[in-house]
Amino acid sequence: MSINLEKQWHHFELQSVLEHLGGDAGNGLDSSEVDSRRNRFGPNIITERKGQGPLLRFLIQFHQPLIYLFNCRSLTRSVLSVGLFSNRSLLLGVAAMLSLQVMFTYLQFMNTFFHTVPISLEAWGRIILVGLFASLTVAVEKSLRRGAHDEPAREVSNSPA
Image 1 (cartoon, one colour):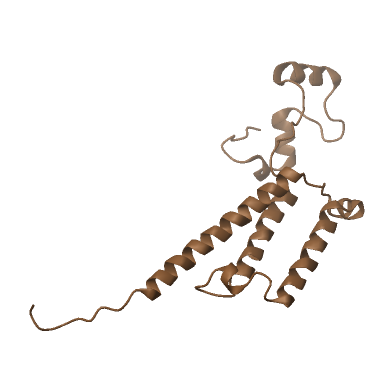
Image 2 (image 1 turned 60 degrees about the horizontal axis):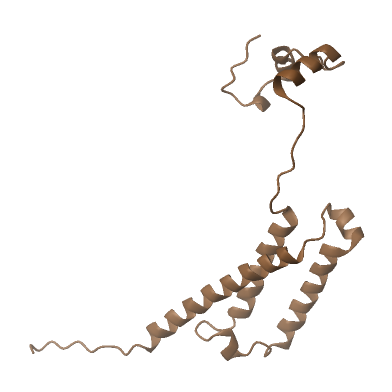
């Protein structure tokens, strides 16, 4: 049977793929075919890609709402002018959430349960940088919004000058 290679492999029936590749679902490949394919294609090794793992991506995305949580207390005033520590309920909630997050990240039983690994200080640095960038972006927006509201309204005159 011929397989149209323009389609994705997962669209084909198992038997069609096995026939095309010369495999056997019950016995696999014989040792001479394994050697032949290894010589032709190289070893069957999947290299691990270095990059952000799922835990780090989650933490980066999770910290941005925290920045907005502090920033959304005023549409025009900065976080510092509102008072960073002025809302004790917010601080307690954030402290509890960060404590749970640290446990999720570093406790062995949590790593085993969620299939994660602890992250490095460098990764925490990246998380903080993303959060600071988000905070700076909101601060610039508030500054622009404040400038638009502070500009005096101009009166329009119908008489010629």
